[in-house]
Amino acid sequence: MLLEIAALTKEYKRNKLPFYAVKDANLSIDTGDFVSIIGRSGSGKTTLLSMAAGLLKPTSGAVTLEGSNIFSLSDEEMSFLRNTKIAYIPQGMSLLPNLTVLDNVRLPFYLSKQEGDAAEKALSLLEQVGIVRLAGDYPKQLSGGEQRRVSIARALINDPALLIADEPTGDLDTETTAEIMQLFGLIAQNGTAILLVTHEPDMVSYGNRVYVMNAGTLTEKK
Ligand SMILES: Nc1ncnc2c1ncn2[C@@H]1O[C@H](COP(=O)(O)OP(=O)(O)OP(=O)(O)O)[C@@H](O)[C@H]1O
Ligand SMILES: [Mg+2]
Image 1 (cartoon, rainbow, N blue to C red):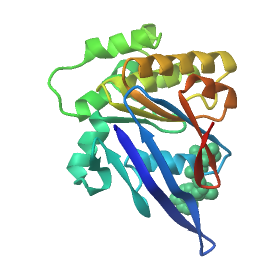
Image 2: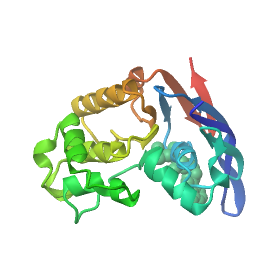
Image 3: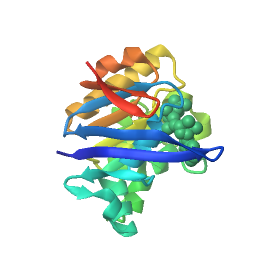
């Protein structure tokens, strides 16, 4: 198993009263899986993904990646993991405004301290997501959909085993959303597992498994 989420729980306080943003969530993801999570605003989707990506520490429960509990890793091991094995596309825009499209895509490569400059690979990923002509532009010169494609190319630069994306089509029109979902389908076929949150129930037909988050509780949709 690539990723296992077991009894994952996150408790927060509001007006001094504790509540569960995520309660006892269980989910397993294997290579090539394409898992979608739907659910209302505030139901705990981002909280769950942030814990799955190792960015947020759970109150209890475990996230196991290829057999090791990610929350027992050292800071150094954790950042290596985040730069190489797990790619995370956060909700909203996440490109660096002062870097070109090409440099945004290459950034995780540099952060993982590998040899070489990855320009060719970055360009081929930009080609794959259909925007290689924009390589020299800056994020503010791009449309929302084009910026999303840059974040997807960037997420793939280090050949992650798992790509986690939080509403990657949140603010896009229906046609662009369908194109981006097809792109995720291709990525899954090429062996990178996908875990994504989506608002649009129509879009879940692209995934091989669908889960619903409801007030912190995750259940599989049959
Ligand atoms: N750092 C925090 N401290 C306290 N409460 C939080 C914190 N982060 C999130 N919450 C609360 O936890 C619940 C789940 O939030 P989360 O961001 O996971 O929802 P979501 O399903 O991603 O919503 P959306 O679809 O709007 O992005 C919400 O009630 C939110 O207000
Ligand atoms: Mg969210």
